[in-house]
Image 1 (cartoon, rainbow, N blue to C red):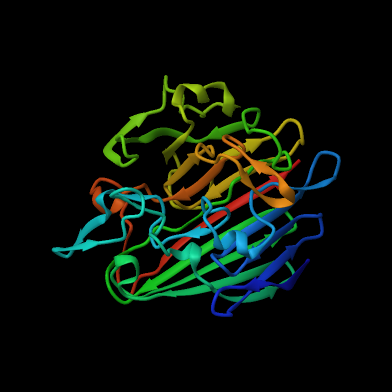
Image 2 (image 1 turned 45 degrees about the horizontal axis):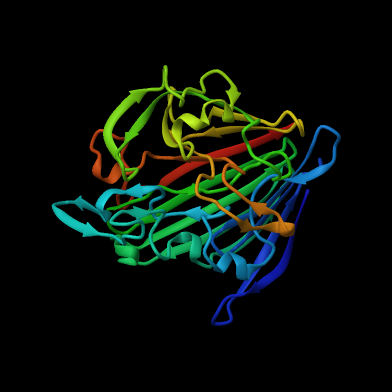
Length: 343
């Protein structure tokens, strides 16, 4: 196993951005840049042992600096949506950046996905890893407290990509981090309608017309959201136009690392399992991607990939019945997600 470091480019102002390539002994590679802690590529062998890239992204830093739907990024301080871009804490109302209409999405205008992180690599007999750090100052995007965040990406010889997140704060605040990789197990070609999906969730969080949870938790039974038995993503996607974009309440019995979802592409033979310690997972089927030119000149279109974003529930800051995203001084936010690949 090995990890390589390459200059990827410079951002306005001259700060350098580096790409780190994590490699194991079985032909799997994970490419990460320290801008946005973005996963730019995941190379995985197919059924014929031919390597192929299974996540959407770009070839250059300039493209990542432009507008895009969070390809491969770590998003926070709070991922997903916060209704009306506000929350109350200790009797005080905090107004955070509204960047999706009147609501807050994925950390605001300049969230964690648009920051340069510090980077430190490590190698042991079991894995190679990259630790990325960022200090989010008190008041950034409206959030209280200075937050120290660390994300560790690791790769082992079981073809497991681990994502471990930790954070500490000096004031009460909200934290909900996720990685926003877009997966297409068939070398990022074609749609994901023929991908087979399993999600271990009996319930989902109902949304209003602005994609903000109503507070109701509903059963997936008899709905298009039911993936408790593996089936094609495309089988019922037309019933939820423009596609799937919903948070599942996972059926895990505890906050131990648990297998909660699985994805399989019959054409390439690749499979991916998702394990996490978090209570929710967002299924998103690239509903609003329309003609984005990505790596190797590939054109990304609607339903060309699927996101499986492990998380606390959306708008948990305003939903008392949801698992809490509050982080207090002296505590540590800790979450682990593993994407396990096989063929």
